[in-house]
Length: 435
Image (cartoon, rainbow, N blue to C red; front, side, top):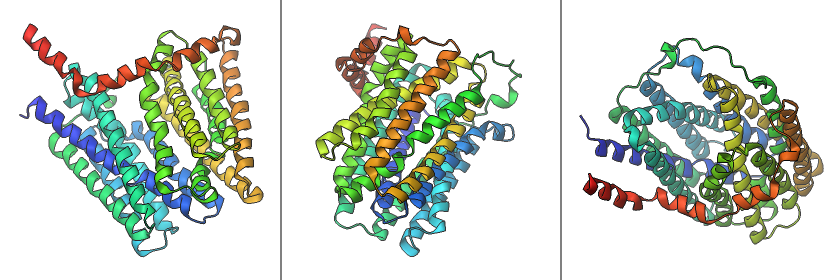
């Protein structure tokens, strides 16, 4: 029987491998497509459809679990699909045209395998790590993944800046496939077999939420459609329109990730006061404002500020939107959240395709960004109005200034980031001495 320490070490190594996989694949593919002279509609399809298929496969996971209750087997099979997708993409870049059908198929397999494996992997980790260590373990694991992802993004972007070639991109994708294989091996060799309780659970009574999950998802789908009118084209804008270097581009794309990690505590403080709708209003307004501001200035300091604002607002929006579904449907969160994410992903695909057609007709990124921003504000306000109609909150109760002050407080976020580091090992040793 493995000790708890050796098991946890294996899971941290697995997190390292996952961080390297993401760092050498997802952002680099965005760099590759953003630097190519592709038709806007084709670019939108290549970027949005694979992720949408991944969301749909994740939503279908609850039905698959009826036939495969072994989380370990399901996670390994899904990771194998993801690794195959990485190898196919690397082969397409090295041997074939990077715009080929095989490149697209490889991307689809990568996203389907990756998103399908996330749920059973989390279940395995929760089962194999001592429950008393869950908070510390998952926070540290997330930090390890984030740091490795950023390091790989920046280092690979620096290498690509010396000369972007298909063979170099293929090499990075093969490294991603190799590290993911190590991750899959650790799951297979280290984890105990984990059987889901879904297949043995008793039927749950229907939820009594005042909001239909289908209607809520359709409203959210419209908002995601407005968001993705511009989202797939920021990489092309930065790499081709204003000719930023790969290193600066990677730095700008890393800023939202860093901001999310630092500001989640502030969002949690706001939600602890039961002010989720106030936070949703602030996040929605900021998300709608950001693309309009992109059309004003293209300097690196200005874009850095906008990326920080984007990370701050999306951290709150994603957190609150999932909590809304969880609070409304506590007894069937898995099924309802799957429907919600799947329909939202379809909205993202539709928005990307429409945005591609608009960019093809106007050939103006600034017009596209401004149009997307206006639609984001309209559909975001429509989302708030829909929730108000169901008496979930009232506009007159919003305390926007107080909410912004809470979110902009720096000290609690820095304190939360420090707690993730191994500094609290001293607390462990102190508690052992007391015991």
